[in-house]
Image 1 (tube, rainbow, N blue to C red):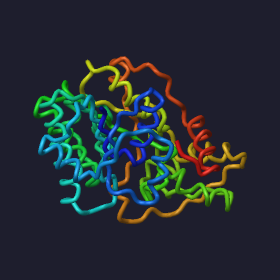
Image 2: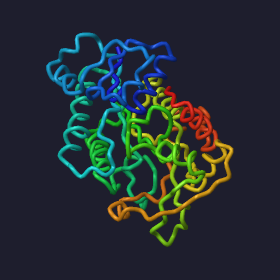
Image 3: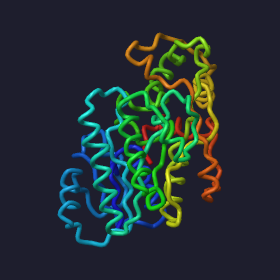
Image 4: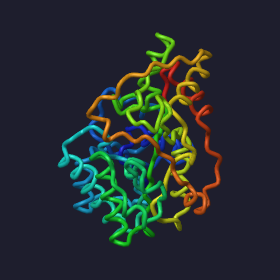
Length: 321
């Protein structure tokens, strides 16, 4: 049996799609009570049961899961980069993760959890996922801090060789529609681009970057779940790994890729970033994926243009993985 927390969410439901494609359906999906916007993420997918995340933690604490668990994919978390309630992050992201990790180690269950590229903060420490570099990082928001503190807990308790942490960078793709402001810019802007024939991007507030020229490591969700599944198949691999393309691209590149996928001329309008985001904004991210490659992951990773082109097809049809 496989446990998939956050299984009705974005990356979680796409991973469920991947597991089904690999012939796996003995899966327990764990998540918050389903809101209408999340229900389509699970439609057509095969799993044994759905359990509320708090009820699931109670079962774990009481050691009453019943059936032998082969693996826990822990992708459930509060992913808001603007929420300011630190207690909420501690309970839902940090303490919840600790309890599942401890349970997994005690029961010899494969444990794979989601960290985040947000842990790298302003990038001044670089983007190496080596443990010695992870210890130096300073995230810019509370979400990144909660993920970072769990990474630190894993390293300081010498658990990195026993479990796997995945630092997802800027993941985009189908099944993210429920995420509101936390959706990718592609999803948030698509309808407006189709209607107005132009894309709106934040104006740069750092002199080092021209408007639209800050860079992110944008990764298509299918590639992210392929990399995640690799660690399910290869149980001898442990540690914390970056999950990205390894190639930073500009927001202007993203706008051009969307325009190309829609057979439009790229037109971009820049507007001021809200002041509350300016000191928390990552102007550059680029996953160092050399550790991932050394671990044996050798699949090709979609470039920005190919990932965006396929995703635009989903957005046109309002369809899901």
